[in-house]
Length: 332
Image (cartoon, rainbow, N blue to C red; front, side, top):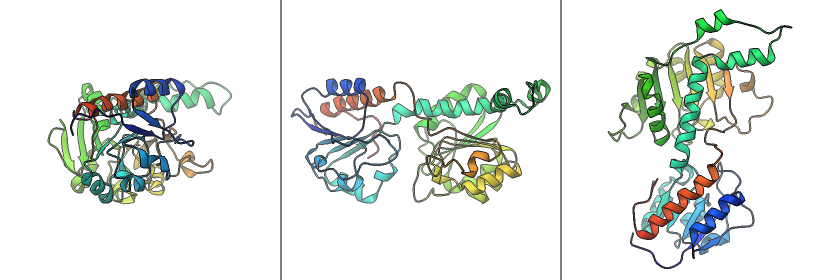
C-alpha cells in the first residue's frame, strides 16, 4: 500500500451523535463523506444494500458483506465493532485479496471496557455483592437483613483461583493484565496459538481436558459456524463443581437450556451474562428467573466516550492509510 494523495470517497453508515460527527468531519479534511438516509443504530447487524457504497473507496461502519464483495472500488473497510465474523468468509477474503483490500476493526476501542466488565463481574461475585444488594433493596421480610456471618464466610478471594478464557484475542489479553496482580492460574483457548500470549494456552480441540480445573470459565467466543451452542450440556458437566460462567462473546455460543440446568443443579454456581439469545431477552424468558444468573443488556463495550473513540480510531487509521503505514486492528 503506497501513499495516497488523491481525495477519497468515504462511506459511513454508522449513526453517531453530533460531537462525534464533528470530529469525523474535521478528521476527513478534503475527503468526501457519503452517508445514507437510514443509518445503523446498532453494531449487532450489518446494514442492507445501499447504492451509495458503489461510489466509495473506504467504508466506515457496518456495510453489507455481500455488497462489499461486489464493490471492486472499495479498498478498505473499517468496522465499528471488535468482532468481524459476518465478514470473515472465504468469498469476502478472496474478493479483498484480489483488489488488494483491507479490513480493520475497532478492537482497541472495546478491549478496555469489555475486559473491565468481566473483571467487575468476577470481583462482585467473589465479594457477594449482587446478593447483598438484592437483600438491601428487595428483602421479603418486614425488616432489613444483616447477614454478616453468612456473607463473611461465603466471600472469596480471586487470589490463587483459576480461570479459562475462551476466545483469546485483544479483550482477553487486557483481562489477563487486569488479573495479573491476583496471581491466578490462567489458561487461554484459541484455534491458533501465536506463542506471544503470555499465559498457558491450549488449542480449542484440546480445551475440554482442562475445563474441570477452572474456577471461572470466561466465554469471549464470536458467533461462527464452529461456535454455535459450543457450551453445551456436556461441557457444563465437564466444568468444575461450583465454577462460575461468564459470557461476553455471543449469546448463541451457549446452550442456554443446558446452562439453566447446570445452575439449578449447582454444577455451575453462578452465571454472568452480557449477551443472550435472543436480544433483547423477552420478559418471560427463563433466564430471568434462573438461580444466580446475573444479566447485563449487552453493555460490556459501552462507555461514555464510545462514539468519540470509534471516530478517533478510524481517523487515526485513515492517517496511516494515507501515509502507507500499517493499520491498527487489521484482520484482512
